[in-house]
Image (cartoon, rainbow, N blue to C red; front, side, top):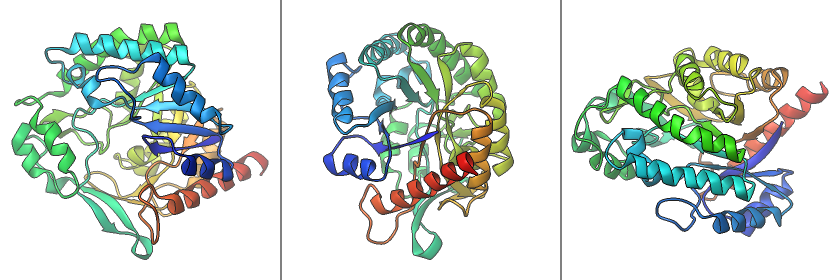
Length: 341
């Protein structure tokens, strides 16, 4: 087990130096700002990889292409075959650049929160979700009007989507169609495709069904892909907010860990489960962080861990250097204790 820094879309000297000073060895970029309106080019990926390596670090994963690269494939609408071919090109170029993992989600209207200013410990600001404040089964512009504070960016995504309900079975058909097209290329190029759970893990939002909200859905996805190139970006925060809370996280690790299907982990937590939860500091959420690190170790997990979302604390930067230093140090201590205890 090792740590990575991430959740930024551009590299800069201060952040990479910060990571090295904390002893972090890996880098994740989320929706990196690269040229290309439909796919990523090999040369741009090589430039990105070499820039990370100059700091003595490894580019572990690129998580999420722009949604505009594959939203038609997720929704199963006209133009999806062209988008899928471009997605296959991105996978090929990542493999040839030596970037081993592409993280992805299957949420055409993204991550939802109903507040980004919920008071947390000591007055820190955290994000929260409350299903009672949204209209989950209302499609398109009406759903956009129901999106609560802080989600203005999602409004435009919803309003350009289909003016109809997208059912769960249709979403499963779309996922299978997508996987059958992209998994063979991932296998050929030696790239792992790592699926992120739905966040929040509810049945439907914005008139679009959400698939990846429980263990059964991940098992179904694994069986559809039927490939060593398929795995999970197991976001503990998303899994902790599912029904079952801490027990659900433990069950997922215990099931997918020994099968080698946990590619990497987002190590964060929440208080509460759907339909209402708040993000929080490590150690005050649903699960015991020390127990989860020991469980990961016992399953043979050898991927990297990312601190992911962090609370907004006093005097911090927009990216959250102070809060991330706390989370990274916390996780490093847990790993050391698990490996030497």
